[in-house]
Amino acid sequence: MTAGPEHALAHFLARAEAVLARVEALLPPAPPAPDWQSAHAFRWRKRRDGMGWLQAVGHPARIALDDLHNIGAQKQQIEQNTRQFVAGLPANNVLLTGARGTGKSSLIKACLNQFAEQGLRLIEVDKADLADLQDITELVAGRPERFVIFCDDLSFEEGESGYKALKVALDGSVSAQSDNVLIYATSNRRHLMPERMSENTSYRSDENGDLHPGETVEEKISLSERFGLWLSFYPFKQDDYLDIVAHWLASFGCTAEQVAAARADALRWALQRGSRSGRVAWQFARDYAGKLSMSRE
Image (cartoon, rainbow, N blue to C red):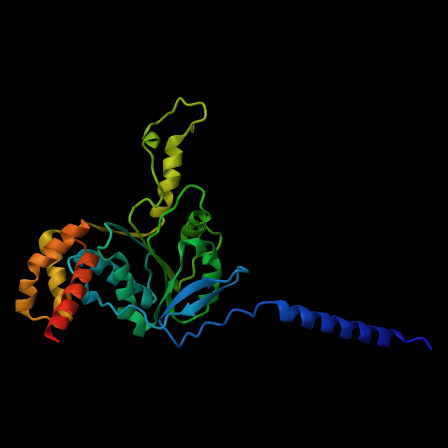
């Protein structure tokens, strides 16, 4: 007796479901959904198969705006911009550039701590993952929180894909940037891409040279110009450096007399490292306060 078409269809569907079940068992699990209530800071992570997800940061840096000294103008500008943003008012993407160790990334982390209770959230994205900016934006677009996408120590070499992805995310897509997302980036160089002496000429006679080098230079600086707010940071003077040392030593419980006694050691520490930066001051204070506590014990 020949089976009817209904029986054949049921048999086919049963076999298809069995095949799909075996295939699904071989596939990696779906990325976990972000737990928005568990953290204020997140990192964008990628699996080997290219799938990305937001990983909650369990212990973010607890630095406060009051901990950052001798960058008052920069602090005032980014604090005001962030205050506007969390209030739902117009605000700008921010590029922080300049000397290393002067508080660029710390300032962004301090803004998170200042405004987290008002709904601010931070998403750290590595330069290698900037091509996923559109996916990240779409993931958070419907959320009530306000998101700062944080790109630290940003710079590009010729041909890197992240350059164009960031350029489009800032101001180059047919779709408008989500009103609950801003990009805050730090860099040691203002134009984010290397510039060459040959690009300062208006014409090069080399037959393989660029006939319009001026346009090449314009392309290289166009990314920086898409940030609405530029903040520049400069090396600290000696007194500025010592002021930061004193602040951190006091935060570690040192007395005024101990802070004064540490000045010479603090200057030698900076001389050995060739820098009088906020980072170097913090590192010295940790070393000095730790040794002081050991000597008491």
